Image: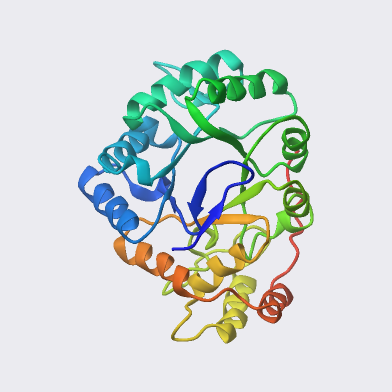
Length: 300
């Protein structure tokens, strides 16, 4: 598996990682998927304290015991659960981040986190205090690098200008190209890496699955037509989902794509994209021509 440097940090990540949100809560199944991913060269595992109320972090932590040094462990913070209440509230305060990281470390069974990410962010946050929390954790050796998981270009620009983020996790796929004209050029210029989530668009670009509804600003018939056009670029050696993953990796700023997987079949199909050659400029252009620039503006 090819590895790429994450921003200007010392972290090197597999170009295809694993988004762990889809693992489920059953330990045996999750352990098998995580073990297979690691055995096949995945080094980047992405989880969050929000997923399944912390259970996801626990499952990831158990799966990496005995092989921690081979894993780039990424998790997130900012969505605060209130005991005795459903749901969560947003909290990007320094105090909360410094407290929440301890709970994540305990669930993950480790004494450090490779990549700690703000799980969202708004312009109304105490951004300087948020940044100082991450910088303090980095100085203390609790985290090795930090980043932000966001689709809001104005928030991303603030962190680019004011912080030492190594990465931005951004929703990016053939059907969601919003970042191409907003944040990807900026991040490439500044040497900040993108971790592309949702490269197969929640299954909209997955193999062997007929979509039943539209996605983003694609109506169902438009999505079906797009899949047909993309089919012209597939082959026995390159499936639709692999084409989609390679598209996300075709941007210079993208260091890794993190498709999720809830079955071994999905996992293997996604990881096989590592053996598919990068798309040519002509192929990238053909995909852009078949898809469309998204009408929906990114949120503030």
